Length: 151
Image 1 (cartoon, rainbow, N blue to C red):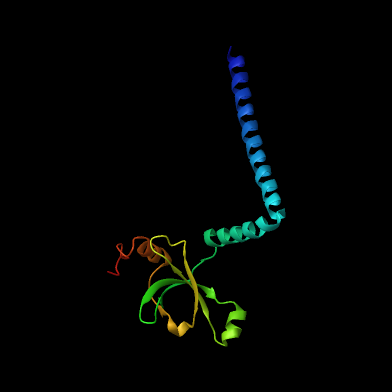
Image 2: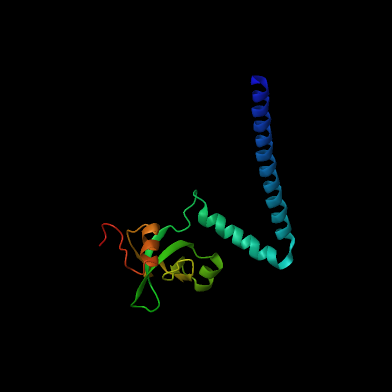
């Protein structure tokens, strides 16, 4: 009876391991071929590729998507909104204005995934000592949650 029990356990483990391998292989192949298919559909491929690039940039831990938190004059000159500096503006925009510009994202409350992408001269921005996470928390809470040590 002991050897039959061991054979039963070994068969169970082998079946279990084969199931895990097959499942991961099937899912991997499914995602690979669906990705290839989406890249071939004319209009969908532009939206899909752009979405893929945005998601990879925002959620990769190697890069910071937003470098600095600033106060930007928005929506008018004497009113300020919290904004996130993404990077320098495209060269074509800077050449058209003949000035050095910075791309700034002004998120909306309470949904910071929507907002405005604006270009400012660096001297028009007020750089503040606040992390991106603190700024997003402040924006999502509609200004109710003030960052620690900055009340």
